[in-house]
Amino acid sequence: MRNGFKKWTILAITAALSLSLILASGCGAGKPAGQSGAKKEVKLGYVNWAEGVAMTNLAKVVLEDKMGYSVKITMADVAPIFTSVANGDYDAFMDAWLPVTHESYMKEYGAKLTDLGTNFEGARIGLVVPEYVSINSIEEMNGAKAKFDGKIIGIDSGAGIMKATDKAIKDYGLGFKLIPGSGPAMTAALKDAVEKKEWVAVTGWKPHWKFARWKLKFLEDPKGIYGKVENIHTVARKDIEKDLPEVAQFLRNFKLNDQQLGSLMGLIANSDDPLKSARKWVKDNEKLVDSWIPKKK
Amino acid sequence: MMHTIPVGKVFEAIIIWLRANFDGFFNLTRLGLTGFIDAFENTLLFIPAVAIIALLAVVAWRAAGRGIAIFTVLSMGLIYNMGLWPQTMQTLALVLTSAIIALIVGIPIGICAARNDKFDRMVRPLLDFMQTMPAFVYLIPAVLFFKLGKVPGAVATVIFSMPPSVRLTNLGIRQVPHDVVEAARSFGSTSRQLLFKIQLPIAIPTILAGVNQTIMLSLSMVVIAAMIGAGGLGEEVLKGITQLKIGRGFESGVAVVLLAMVLDRITQSLANINRRKNKQA
Image 1 (cartoon, one colour):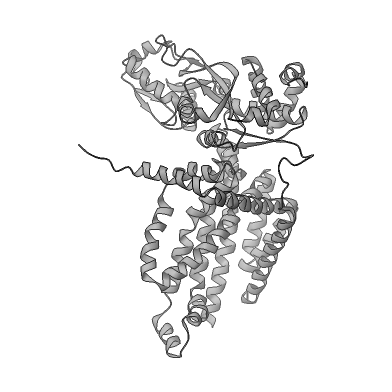
Image 2 (tube, rainbow over the protein chains, first blue to last red):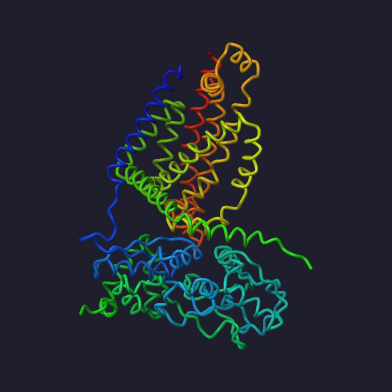
């Protein structure tokens, strides 16, 4: 006879719900932001790309531990992040690849953004193949078309690197088809090919964790379709320098080189907690980190 | 020359107009929803995991029997063991908030649709639209209106998960046998009495099936909601797929499935209890 229990069940659920609502109204009032005495809040958006995860967590640690801000970091897709920084809802995004990869977002939102300069220089995009592939240049690709199965594995069809690859196919007269997909699909195809020692060409960029996991190389690009180098910029909302001058200056000063970013990404890759790794990295690189913090006048 | 009809342009213009004119409304909604979801989440995180598992187990036992109760304890225990408890509670808060809103709005619409054929015909294409429009399409408008975070995620979830509760409420009431309705009418019951004393009680199993479907669809939105910063299990899944961490992605996926099964079995058996009771009456 379970019917008698129905009343109890419904009673229990009602009780639980009302309890949670009562508790809710108690602690749900929230603190008014930016009130006297409260720490100033900084909101950073990031995409789940290794270098962005690393730099954003590092910035959070420094801003919180050394500069006394409270930092909220939110992970989302790249388009919503550009949208909300341009809207002024978020303060900054530290992973904008310019001048090529994220050009389309800058075209759309550039007027509503402040470019706080580069935080990493010498990033690269291009066609990436495993090291065991015996050709070295995009110009040699047509000769090995069968080995590549006539395909280049791409990422999201709107991405800047896809447009660049379309141009490369045209300018080099490659008889290849560019297969659109997604970042995960591209890395999965790469993983599969590397494990079977097959030839594969993907649209790739660096810094990226795939270079740490597999032995890969960029194909030479004598026509310079993919640009010489890319830099990673921090873009911020329009009036950040007025509202958060110290933070803006810190983000301008924030710069990592290949070796520094690599060691930070390595620490993060080997642990479950990026914040903890970033804290450890700050301890090991105290001098560099301190040089970013604006001097109080 | 072919003229293209500017469907997309019109949509964009509507979004811009809404943003310009209803900013206050969107802000208020956002603040209200943020407060509610955060509070819900904080409460769930404040209560020790053991207590929540025990509570769920008791509910499952009362509603669905011992088997489901044991299953509940095992699956929630596994989630806890995999270290995904906070994310699961975040997801639960988001899913339940969205489902509650979807039901509060959806069931009355379903009732109206059942009682008014014209309204029904109007609502139907809207429901088709809500259910089949790929959710990715309204991610950016959702971010424009409600900023990054849990709220646009909840809004997208409500839109996606509401249709079954409307449809099944409508269906349940329409399926009430004609002779019963006739009999009630001939005894002089008002239309309000007819609804509350005859139609709704008989339709309840079907309505509860709609509730169940709404909750399940809400859960299927967690990954998409994570793309606009909603966090929770969806974020873990997204981290798994974007960096090819197969194990972690699978674990969080399993957590979503287990949470879904627990919620499904509990809500489904509530409907069944009702059905049994109706048969006996």
